[in-house]
Length: 351
Image 1 (tube, helix red, strand yellow):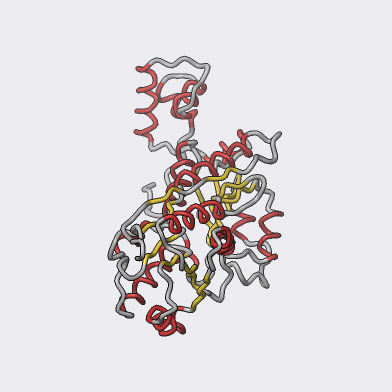
Image 2 (tube, rainbow, N blue to C red):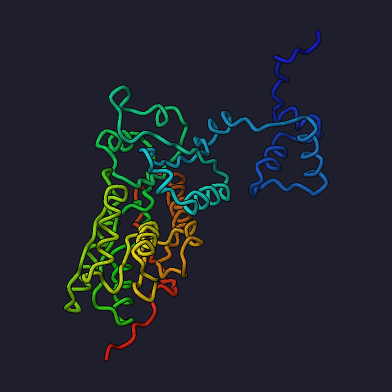
């Protein structure tokens, strides 16, 4: 009977590979696992097994592997899909770190994108119930709804939070101390009238915004300087920003919540007839590498090691999976590095 286009070839098992290569199934398993094994296999035998597997079109049976090991070798990476959240807040360095670290430890990654708002129809998301995950890395940029938080916590997966502050099972950045360092830097460069500048969005913001603002205010007050905070809605208040920059009350320097805010400030400053840094110094508390080329002068900004943090989150998650006796790991905290740019020069001493 001729095989039709709709018929699938039979799955080749390791037993069949062993028959074709004329070796035991234990040898085949040792070779195809790619991991250290007590079974000694010569180079010639290994080549014979691999050639037999390739010629037969062998594909590993992940279901059988899961039954043997109790693991799916699948790590979930959760991202919020509230309107605009992915496009605005998902940093490629996080994704790269997660995928690279998981691959290095022989794990797949399932990218889970869920609407973070509407769970009236299905309070326990199908992605959590049927994704065959061993663990979950949660990179939440906004604010989890109580329903989704509960769904995640009752999912049964070991959970590690990335870029979110928790005492255990978390990898995050020290936003407060990093912003304090940046504010000190701007003050030491000779600036006294400094404003904090951030977008005032209608959807929940990441907690880092409040921490950075608080650090800015505390540092200014420690130097007996008056902190100014400017919140804005871009589409509605652009004219107000321009008028503020044209006024006699404009600051000498502006510390922005993130590079995107600094880019908006640069645009408004240009429209207001100001030059950066001659008329206005600008710094940012969070670098967004993809925006670097859009600044007229190189921006002074804080660079968070997002790739390294993501790698650490994967290792933490897999340690929890592979050692079931340990339910928690201490949180790991990373510090940003200051990247000095031409946007905050030393301010000349007034005569």
